[in-house]
Structure formats: structure tokens, C-alpha cells
Length: 349
Image 1 (cartoon, rainbow, N blue to C red):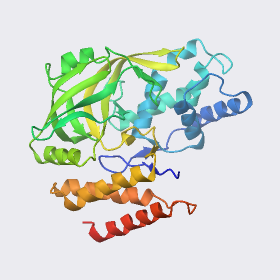
Image 2 (cartoon, one colour):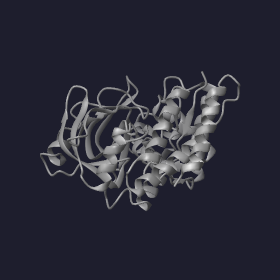
Image 3 (cartoon, one colour):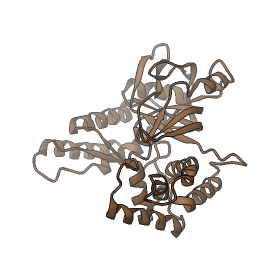
């Protein structure tokens, strides 16, 4: 079956993603040396798919999103200690993967870039990161304005090569949670201007970080509730700073042991994690079903003009990414795609 991919080079809050390619030649050269070595010797047991992808990006001089720069800085900071025991590419995975991420030059550049962008302030060298979860709401009572779900799961290795351990949120819940200083915000698509609900319960269970939230009665909150009812929001993500972590050589994963949670977000796509460049909606029917929901919402909803305009921009972007199948085996799907595009032109704001 023909698979439809959405290319998400868009930031879900603003629908444009800033990216930077002004890293020095030393960063590119480090990655190129790694790829040359790998071409002759292979990766062996070293590296995750993300790390290998990063080496190719840097070697080509491709632009990096802000979130990717954060992950680059995070990786190089925590793995700098690996260089004490690994001094060459033949000496374990440490040096090889460190240079795959840009090496010492990459650490210096990513730190400077994040300071320039205001992502690292003062003497604080910890960067704000996001991590997505492909899981919707466990329950929603829109009459009462209550939603619940999970912001994060424990024990699974994600695309970044991280494993969040149970207990990693304990301190931040106590200090910043609803029974503490109430500093953890509930946002839409990590947009700091879109606080859409108040977290009333936040706790760890055996699965992950579970929450209950009360949707706000302001315009942004009500638009959020309407989008839930229309099935447009079905995933979650967190914005956080890693406090304690440890690389597990056996599982080839970074085990996160303590997190400072700044916000939890409901998101429309797992594209909030830019490491997932392509999102597979599994079939044409899945893709068209979502597009039709989005089309119906923009055409018929009484949400605010600001929300509708942003969704219209998103729909236009998604439609522009979809291409008819190269074969004739999916003529009905191609006809439906053309119909949706023509329909969009007739009713857009």
C-alpha cells in the first residue's frame, strides 16, 4: 500500500522552524572522518540511528533546528567524559560517536549558539529539551472541562536513545507540581503563549508520568477543548531540563534519572520532536481521515480567528506536502487528495 509521509520542517506553534548551519569546518571534518572510518570498518555495535543520522547531517553541512542543537549540546556535554577512556576510533565507541556529533568543536559551537539564542542563560549550562509521546488522552470529560493522560513513559528507549527511569520526576513534582509551587505549565504545542489548562494532579505510576488537568475558560482553553472534541489533538510532549543521567553501555542508551519538568504539552503531531523528520500515517485512509477532520474543524468551528488562521496555515502546508502516487494503483486516493486541495481553495479564510 502506498504510504503517505508528512514532511514536518515546521514548528507547530509558529509553523516555521528556525535552523542554523554556521558551525565551523572543524565540526564537519570531525563527522567526515567518522564516516570515512565507518565506510572502511563499519559501525560495529556503536551508535544509535540518531547519532548516525547526525554524522551525515554535519558532514554535509546541513542546517540544524534549535532543538537538534540542544540535543547536540546535551550529548556532547554528558559524553565528554568518554574521551578519557576512548582516545581513538579503534578504542571503543566513545571517540567515534563523540566526533559523529561534531566533537569538541561541536560542543563549543552548540554552547555558543544556545547562549546566543537565549536558551542557556548566565552560568547555567543546562539546555531546555522536548520529548514527544505518541499517546493521546486516557480520559476527557469536556462537559466538566477535565482531561487526563500521560506526559511521559518509563523504561522504553526512544528515538534520541534515552530511557526515562521511574523516579526521575519525583523531586520536580514535589517542588514544582500542583502541590508545590505550581510552576509546571500545561501548554499547546510547547507555545509559551498558549497555556490552555491547569494541572491539578501529577504523579508517577508504574507506566509513566500521569496527569489530570482542568481546561481554562479563556479563549485559548475553549479552542483547545473544541480541538480535543474534534479529534485534532492526540499526542503529548514534555519540555524539560535533564538534571541527572547516565549512559548504559549494555543497552546503548542514556538513562535519565532526574528531570526538572518545566511544562507538559498536548500536541497535534509528534513532530514536536524534530528528530522524527517524517511521520508515517500508516495508510491513505489515516491521512485523509485526519485531513478531513482538520478541514471540517476550520470550516465549521466557532473557535477564535487566531486559532482558525493557524490551523488553516497548517492544513495548507500539509496539503502541499502530499504528492499523488507515482503508480496508478491508488487512483481513488489521488482523486480524494485533489478534491481536498480544490476544496481548500474554495473555503480558506
